Image 1 (tube, rainbow, N blue to C red):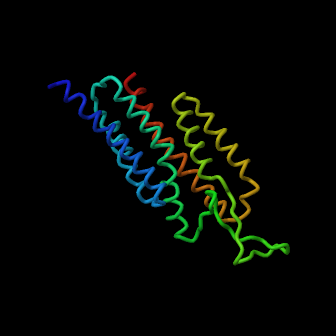
Image 2: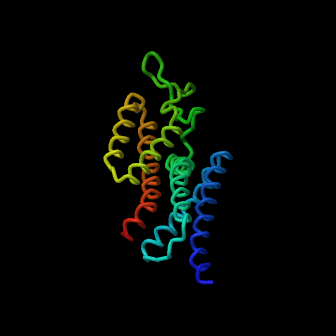
Image 3: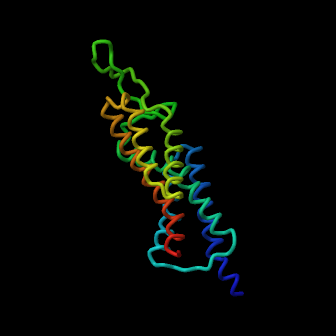
Length: 198
């Protein structure tokens, strides 16, 4: 009976985290980023678990599955969560492009902005976000935080020419901060229990 009590919290954590990953995938597929808010629950419970220093013995394999689930939640769940935050920040004024970018007014040859023509900037932002979150979580797992600085530098330099429109700058900054903060939270929930128990 005692071994069952040890396993129940870990099985609950596995189910909870994997359900959050599934809901994040569903949010992406249905284009309903608000569903990604479900991912805040296991992260919030993880933070409370650490804050209250709850100590459950670790059965074999289950903590590893939770860690892998948190990594997947950090990488995949960051997409709809970032889209949701961007939508709230823009109050619906920002249209997304077909390639994961943002639509901004196109400038004519005279330099005037056209209200009817748009162009997509920050193309590929969805995939860049996945890779960015993977790099942040990987950096946290290996304890090499300078990798995060390199990701920020590469991302900023690579996108510099596309940041001439204020809408693009705002979306770039907000999206990067939300995406990296989410990945850092999920990465921290993987390594902090190990560091605190060492």
